[in-house]
Length: 211
Image (cartoon, rainbow, N blue to C red):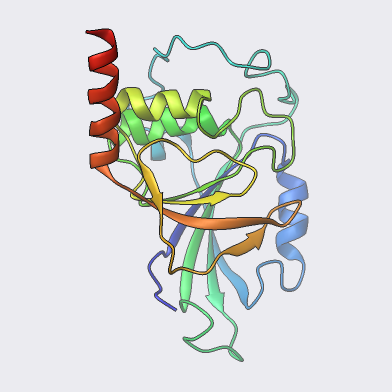
């Protein structure tokens, strides 16, 4: 195991806090690990300047962004500290890691946190469309998230992309890494790496077409 990542962000506006806490309380909710601490977070903890104006003009494919949000659910954000079970060793995974759960819209969160607040893309990103439905736009190529990433040049270095999702332009598959399977329908997921040269060629081609 490379132990490359020790902090994860999970964003979902369909999972209510009680449902999430009930799942976490189950044994092996995260296989091979158990929770040892929790840190409650407020908006000011992750966005010290508050929310930024959303200046992307592309219209969503499937209605308004808040169509599927429960207005009665109180937004939440907390970090869960996980520790490896004593019957596991380094070959299983890191001794500790953190998962931050955020009740929010994934596309808007990418824009607010990575594009605006931190001005830095996540190191690795899991890209899969229609994992549980209720998405107002696709996450893959041609969707609103793709538009945000391209217009702001905020590309993750690595992307784990599901077989049912179109990878963003600028990425090439790493062939010698074995795929994994996951999500609601156990789609195959392959690892891709960002290649600036691919983006440059694409921009050059568009420039010639326009010229």
